[in-house]
Length: 296
Image (cartoon, rainbow, N blue to C red):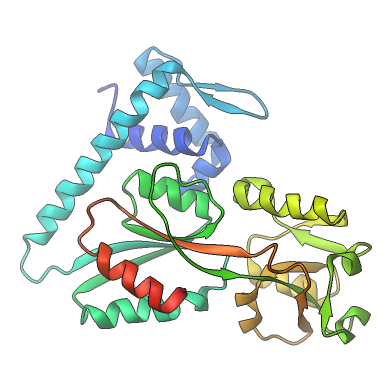
């Protein structure tokens, strides 16, 4: 058995970039126990330790830090070879693997994807993936995506970002709640209410930004763990289990029992949008132009 193969490199890169076994497992569409076993087996085959880990932290060893840039180059070369072969096939459409942040309501991106298809007259096949922004960045760095629209702030390492529009934060609450009678709300109004909020691992940079704003306004409600599925979240809000702070794009989701209200500090808590494109991708100029036209 070879000590390194494509599957082993993909597993190593996912863990090395996420520095979180649960997030890496989600990115690879597998569960955490098999991922942990695969990493241990890889370390045994190579005869070196790749990760220092305890219950709270994962860090690269010197050996892993040396391997990571080489692994990324190997995976990029494999992707380039596959795309070059596909381009030589008669009638084969160019593929754009596009990542879209799951932090925003999906209909926000419809004009962007529709205009991309229209501008290329069907010559480009879109392969769209919705995921958390840090995982989209990791996939793009590993050349598993060609472009991504991410929520900002997000750590993007050395990838250039085209900053687009911002989505101010609003309040979603049960329409029968007494606070729904007001046209706008402030964080102070929500202080005694249960508020759904996402876990830091999903979006560390944005989480830290928001909590700096919360501290500035002495906002410390009882936070509830936000479900990953926004439809489940809104169902819980409609049932009166708690309120949610969401990007303004979610106001497009109309459902019985839900009221959306402007938040006084909404601009301070705004989530930005940014486009990142793989270096040298032939559709870079088109992607940047259309994103600017439809998402700015």
